[in-house]
Length: 351
Image 1 (cartoon, helix red, strand yellow):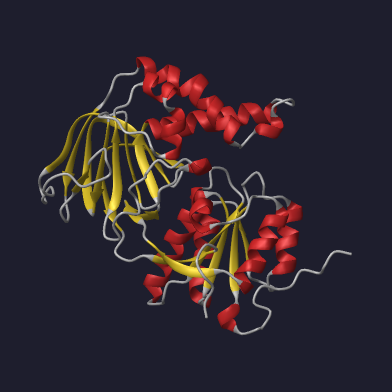
Image 2 (cartoon, rainbow, N blue to C red):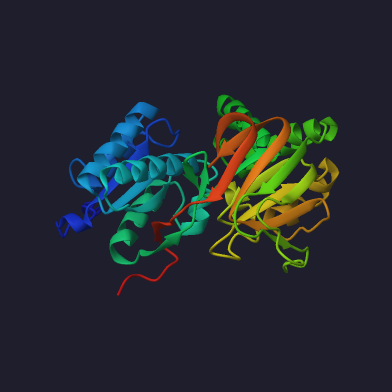
């Protein structure tokens, strides 16, 4: 006989209460899943958002109630939106930011690789909620501030275009009976890269970008993983040349465990900036090394930055936390003024 789910924070003090915010539009968020979560958390602590307006109102309620822990159920984009909105509402009310956690219900799930969240099946979510009570530790997580949005990663160029290709390929898989079970997984992403992204970039021109240091000294990383020469000072040019992608992150991972930012953990006071002018042939020949973060080339340039401005000669698609946000020619990226507390299942539990 199945064991009856126990309320998260069943010891009943407010300090144990957990708010769960679920993206109601996520494919894996079913009525059965919502009902299961409603049985686990205390009454009134489960929020299902199906629009931006609902999400902002939920964030306001969470801030007003002062939940100590907030879990997001969805993908990286849901996490980014909830963290940004809740912290903004807390600032407006003069309240302390809560601790944030991640339930793996979306696609990509870069945050899950960083925080040790289980897979997206219902049993994995229940296990994570159980670990939250018994063994889940906490730590600080640095974030980027991209036009006021707090996110662990973002980028302009081929990553955004590839994301659009992936979403279209996923929809095609979902409509095809024989491929439906692969929709939303790594196979879908690989298919979209090989069949759509690589052929397009084979003939696509390389846009020109100019990146200016707007903050503390920028550290240039060599191909051997060591800093090169003196730092680049404020106001000086970090990079000026062709680029297929300019991406930035405070975590090593992209979606599906791809370790695109191998230097993201090098400095607590810097984020990783990667400028890529790689060819389609290089991607095809070295996809495994690119995926695990070991590929080095003179067409990949790595920097550790505190704040930069990015200037393209033409508008480029922008993704923030895995969500497409239109196109930009100029954008300012900085390390967030303060980190957030996160539930980290890799971290030791509190004593």
